[in-house]
Image (cartoon, rainbow, N blue to C red; front, side, top):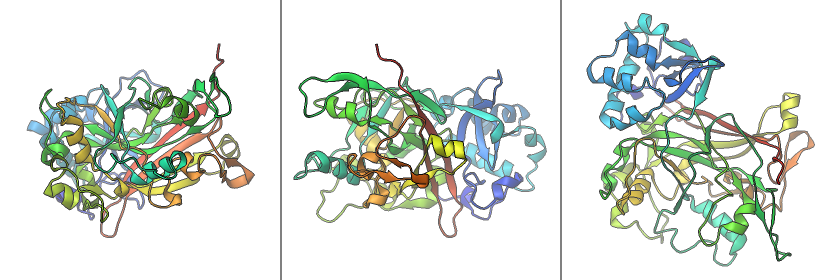
Amino acid sequence: MINETHNPALRSWVVSANAAGTDFPIQNLPFAVFRRKDSADSYRCGVAIGDQILDLAAASRTRVFKGGDAKAADAGATNGLNALMAMGGAAWSSLRLALSRALREKAPEQQALTACLVPQSDAEYDVPAHIGDYTDFYTSIHHATNIGRQFRPDNPLLPNFKWIPIGYHGRCSSIGVSGQCFPRPAGQLKSTDVDTPVLAASKRMDIELELGIFVGQGNDSGAPIPIGQAEQHVFGLCLLNDWSARDIQAWEYQPLGPFLAKNFATTLSPWVVTLEALAPYRLPFTRAEGDPQPLAYLDSPANREQGCIDIRMEALIRTDRMRREGAPAHSLARTSYKYSYWTIAQLVAHHTVNGCNLRPGDLFGSGTMSGPVLEQAAALIELTAGGKNPIALPGGESRTWLEDGDTAILAAWCEGPGKARIGFGTCEGTILPARTIR
């Protein structure tokens, strides 16, 4: 999977793409849907390069791309990535190579493409694709164990977790892009010392640090995707915050799982990083000694050899007071996607094994990506032991659960010796006061 686009020595004629620590060097080239801020322009697709966006609609009109790459660029010039996603892995890879060559130092395309750049500071974003369906998984064994321990101390992990990727279908209509603001949700709440629930605003708002997984080419209904072909159906990854109202969730989740505790908002980062860009950070997929090995339909040589990806992930908080005082956001936890108990290929294979058909732009959530120690717990319900241990913040503040005006910030990146840093940008969302409940 490693090719010339991953060469860490590559440099771009877009000077900011060569800066140390940038999320968007020429080795990355993620996709988003954007327009100029406060304009009446139509949204269109773009590619991040340094602190700029290459407008694919404008680039397509220059005709610097030829043949199949021109068709792929044309598909990416629309107001969603779905058409490009539907073209499949060969088209994505070929376009990425053409973009890489056109954006390198001394590329003859520089003159034509310079006018197609838009500063990221001048852009506003939309959700990257038209999302037809959304499935949220539960793939961190550490998160599942930490949560289970709060409710079932003697048996925290349910027996099916090590055999089957657990998931539920979420709500598409409330998925928003970074910068999303939403009122504190209301629902039924019931404490253990009363017999009757009440309708009230949630008092236990939480974050969940996840990755979003965008489906590329779909499959026909009734035609499962074999695990050996699963990643050919995945376009790329973004950040995902699966906001959770823990008090609503505690009352409603049995017997059918999350409902109002989850469906009020889900926030995505705007940039979708392709699987190809992440190739240098692949790791073997292994199971702890004594754990069951996956069933045959969830196993393959390629998945064992490189099914994991070492994506470093961080959750931060910026309170209203921090914002007013100009203080930096405070880090809550750092973890890695390498701790996932199930791989991307396994999620795709399991989701379709019953004949379920996926479509371009469908979205999976990875589940809260907690690691093996407390500092890697990716949700407040873990970090505070269910609200028992408040987190001290700078300036004398503390948090058990999120308060009105709090902004949650997610970030992710890959880096390592002899490799280009691949970043995801950030995913930000803010909780507003609850609306009046009638």
